[in-house]
Length: 203
Image (tube, rainbow, N blue to C red; front, side, top):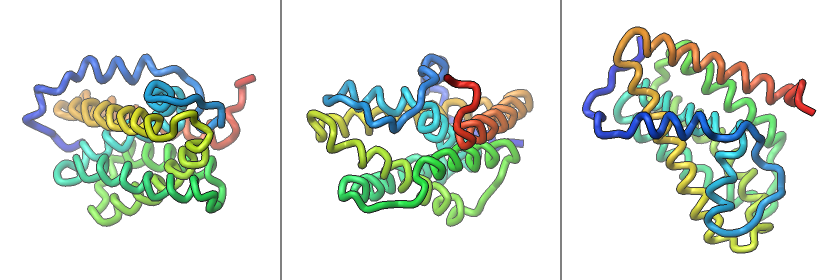
Protein backbone atom coordinates (compact mmCIF):
# COMPACT_ATOMS: atom_id res chain seq x y z
CA UNK A 1 0.00 0.00 0.00
CA UNK A 2 1.25 3.44 -0.81
CA UNK A 3 2.58 5.67 1.92
CA UNK A 4 -0.02 7.77 3.75
CA UNK A 5 0.83 11.46 3.71
CA UNK A 6 -0.71 13.77 6.26
CA UNK A 7 -0.72 17.47 6.89
CA UNK A 8 -1.09 18.62 3.28
CA UNK A 9 -4.80 19.50 3.19
CA UNK A 10 -3.93 23.05 2.22
CA UNK A 11 -2.75 21.93 -1.23
CA UNK A 12 -5.30 22.78 -3.96
CA UNK A 13 -5.53 19.18 -5.11
CA UNK A 14 -8.46 19.72 -7.43
CA UNK A 15 -6.73 22.54 -9.28
CA UNK A 16 -3.47 20.64 -9.59
CA UNK A 17 -5.22 17.53 -10.88
CA UNK A 18 -7.15 19.60 -13.40
CA UNK A 19 -3.85 21.13 -14.55
CA UNK A 20 -2.56 17.65 -15.38
CA UNK A 21 -5.71 16.60 -17.19
CA UNK A 22 -5.89 19.73 -19.33
CA UNK A 23 -2.29 19.56 -20.56
CA UNK A 24 -2.34 18.87 -24.32
CA UNK A 25 -1.17 15.45 -25.57
CA UNK A 26 1.80 16.68 -27.60
CA UNK A 27 5.50 15.92 -27.47
CA UNK A 28 8.34 18.01 -26.10
CA UNK A 29 11.76 18.69 -27.57
CA UNK A 30 10.63 19.48 -31.09
CA UNK A 31 13.06 22.36 -31.55
CA UNK A 32 10.22 24.70 -32.52
CA UNK A 33 10.23 27.17 -29.63
CA UNK A 34 9.78 30.88 -29.18
CA UNK A 35 11.06 33.22 -26.52
CA UNK A 36 9.75 34.66 -23.29
CA UNK A 37 8.29 33.34 -20.06
CA UNK A 38 5.10 32.07 -21.72
CA UNK A 39 7.01 29.99 -24.26
CA UNK A 40 9.18 28.47 -21.56
CA UNK A 41 6.15 27.82 -19.38
CA UNK A 42 4.19 26.07 -22.13
CA UNK A 43 7.05 23.97 -23.44
CA UNK A 44 7.17 21.23 -20.76
CA UNK A 45 3.39 20.99 -20.34
CA UNK A 46 2.88 20.61 -24.08
CA UNK A 47 5.12 17.54 -24.27
CA UNK A 48 3.60 14.29 -23.02
CA UNK A 49 6.96 12.66 -22.30
CA UNK A 50 8.25 15.49 -20.12
CA UNK A 51 4.87 16.12 -18.49
CA UNK A 52 4.44 12.50 -17.40
CA UNK A 53 7.99 12.31 -16.06
CA UNK A 54 7.58 15.49 -14.01
CA UNK A 55 4.28 14.38 -12.51
CA UNK A 56 5.63 10.87 -11.85
CA UNK A 57 8.58 12.30 -9.92
CA UNK A 58 6.12 14.05 -7.59
CA UNK A 59 3.93 10.95 -7.18
CA UNK A 60 6.90 8.69 -6.44
CA UNK A 61 8.31 11.20 -3.98
CA UNK A 62 4.93 11.39 -2.23
CA UNK A 63 4.78 7.59 -2.10
CA UNK A 64 8.27 7.34 -0.60
CA UNK A 65 7.47 10.00 1.99
CA UNK A 66 9.79 12.41 3.73
CA UNK A 67 12.54 13.34 3.09
CA UNK A 68 12.16 12.11 -0.52
CA UNK A 69 8.77 13.81 -0.77
CA UNK A 70 10.69 17.02 -1.40
CA UNK A 71 14.16 15.66 -2.15
CA UNK A 72 13.15 14.11 -5.49
CA UNK A 73 11.33 17.21 -6.83
CA UNK A 74 14.31 19.32 -5.77
CA UNK A 75 16.99 16.95 -7.12
CA UNK A 76 15.33 16.67 -10.52
CA UNK A 77 15.49 20.37 -11.51
CA UNK A 78 18.98 20.71 -10.02
CA UNK A 79 20.28 17.92 -12.22
CA UNK A 80 18.30 19.28 -15.14
CA UNK A 81 20.49 22.37 -14.85
CA UNK A 82 23.55 20.14 -15.28
CA UNK A 83 22.02 18.55 -18.36
CA UNK A 84 20.93 21.95 -19.64
CA UNK A 85 24.47 23.29 -19.43
CA UNK A 86 25.69 20.26 -21.38
CA UNK A 87 23.02 20.85 -24.00
CA UNK A 88 23.82 24.54 -24.35
CA UNK A 89 27.50 23.66 -24.70
CA UNK A 90 26.58 21.12 -27.40
CA UNK A 91 28.13 18.27 -25.38
CA UNK A 92 26.54 15.14 -26.87
CA UNK A 93 24.69 12.54 -24.82
CA UNK A 94 23.63 9.19 -26.30
CA UNK A 95 20.00 8.58 -27.23
CA UNK A 96 18.53 11.55 -25.37
CA UNK A 97 14.94 11.09 -26.55
CA UNK A 98 15.05 7.35 -25.84
CA UNK A 99 16.38 8.05 -22.35
CA UNK A 100 13.53 10.49 -21.75
CA UNK A 101 10.98 7.87 -22.82
CA UNK A 102 12.76 5.33 -20.61
CA UNK A 103 12.42 7.71 -17.66
CA UNK A 104 8.65 7.67 -18.14
CA UNK A 105 8.69 3.87 -18.18
CA UNK A 106 10.89 3.46 -15.11
CA UNK A 107 9.03 6.04 -13.03
CA UNK A 108 5.68 4.57 -14.06
CA UNK A 109 6.82 1.08 -13.07
CA UNK A 110 8.18 2.40 -9.75
CA UNK A 111 4.72 3.76 -8.94
CA UNK A 112 2.88 0.68 -10.26
CA UNK A 113 4.87 -1.78 -8.15
CA UNK A 114 5.07 0.59 -5.15
CA UNK A 115 8.87 0.40 -5.23
CA UNK A 116 10.32 1.61 -1.94
CA UNK A 117 13.77 2.30 -3.26
CA UNK A 118 16.46 3.32 -0.76
CA UNK A 119 16.96 7.07 -0.69
CA UNK A 120 20.35 6.95 -2.41
CA UNK A 121 19.04 4.80 -5.26
CA UNK A 122 15.87 6.87 -5.70
CA UNK A 123 17.86 10.09 -5.94
CA UNK A 124 20.36 8.47 -8.32
CA UNK A 125 17.57 7.29 -10.64
CA UNK A 126 16.01 10.75 -10.65
CA UNK A 127 19.37 12.46 -11.17
CA UNK A 128 20.36 10.38 -14.20
CA UNK A 129 17.08 10.89 -15.99
CA UNK A 130 17.01 14.59 -15.09
CA UNK A 131 20.31 15.12 -16.91
CA UNK A 132 18.75 13.83 -20.14
CA UNK A 133 15.62 15.95 -19.72
CA UNK A 134 17.79 18.98 -19.05
CA UNK A 135 20.01 18.24 -22.03
CA UNK A 136 17.02 18.25 -24.36
CA UNK A 137 15.87 21.62 -23.03
CA UNK A 138 19.40 23.01 -23.05
CA UNK A 139 19.86 22.07 -26.68
CA UNK A 140 16.78 24.11 -27.56
CA UNK A 141 17.38 27.02 -25.20
CA UNK A 142 19.83 28.99 -27.40
CA UNK A 143 17.13 29.12 -30.10
CA UNK A 144 14.76 31.03 -27.84
CA UNK A 145 14.48 34.75 -28.50
CA UNK A 146 15.14 35.51 -24.82
CA UNK A 147 16.81 32.44 -23.24
CA UNK A 148 16.89 33.78 -19.66
CA UNK A 149 13.20 34.57 -19.35
CA UNK A 150 12.38 31.41 -21.30
CA UNK A 151 14.26 29.43 -18.64
CA UNK A 152 12.26 31.16 -15.89
CA UNK A 153 9.00 30.00 -17.46
CA UNK A 154 10.42 26.51 -17.85
CA UNK A 155 11.38 26.28 -14.18
CA UNK A 156 7.97 27.51 -13.03
CA UNK A 157 6.15 24.95 -15.16
CA UNK A 158 8.39 22.13 -13.97
CA UNK A 159 7.77 23.08 -10.36
CA UNK A 160 4.01 23.08 -10.86
CA UNK A 161 4.14 19.67 -12.53
CA UNK A 162 6.06 18.28 -9.54
CA UNK A 163 3.37 19.74 -7.27
CA UNK A 164 0.76 18.01 -9.42
CA UNK A 165 2.43 14.71 -8.69
CA UNK A 166 2.66 15.39 -4.96
CA UNK A 167 -1.02 16.34 -4.88
CA UNK A 168 -1.97 13.15 -6.70
CA UNK A 169 0.12 11.20 -4.22
CA UNK A 170 -2.24 12.37 -1.46
CA UNK A 171 -4.87 10.00 -2.83
CA UNK A 172 -2.78 7.17 -1.35
CA UNK A 173 -4.43 7.88 1.98
CA UNK A 174 -7.07 5.26 1.29
CA UNK A 175 -6.91 1.80 -0.32
CA UNK A 176 -8.90 2.86 -3.37
CA UNK A 177 -6.62 5.83 -3.96
CA UNK A 178 -3.54 3.66 -3.56
CA UNK A 179 -4.87 1.16 -6.09
CA UNK A 180 -5.80 3.94 -8.52
CA UNK A 181 -2.33 5.46 -8.26
CA UNK A 182 -0.66 2.11 -8.94
CA UNK A 183 -2.92 1.63 -11.95
CA UNK A 184 -1.99 5.13 -13.05
CA UNK A 185 1.66 4.20 -12.74
CA UNK A 186 1.05 1.27 -15.06
CA UNK A 187 -0.62 3.59 -17.55
CA UNK A 188 2.33 5.99 -17.35
CA UNK A 189 4.77 3.13 -18.00
CA UNK A 190 2.69 1.88 -20.94
CA UNK A 191 2.64 5.37 -22.41
CA UNK A 192 6.41 5.52 -22.05
CA UNK A 193 6.72 2.30 -24.05
CA UNK A 194 4.46 3.80 -26.71
CA UNK A 195 6.65 6.89 -26.87
CA UNK A 196 9.82 4.78 -26.99
CA UNK A 197 8.39 2.84 -29.95
CA UNK A 198 7.90 6.09 -31.86
CA UNK A 199 4.27 6.78 -30.91
CA UNK A 200 2.66 4.33 -33.36
CA UNK A 201 -0.77 5.37 -34.55
CA UNK A 202 0.02 9.09 -34.53
CA UNK A 203 0.20 10.63 -37.98
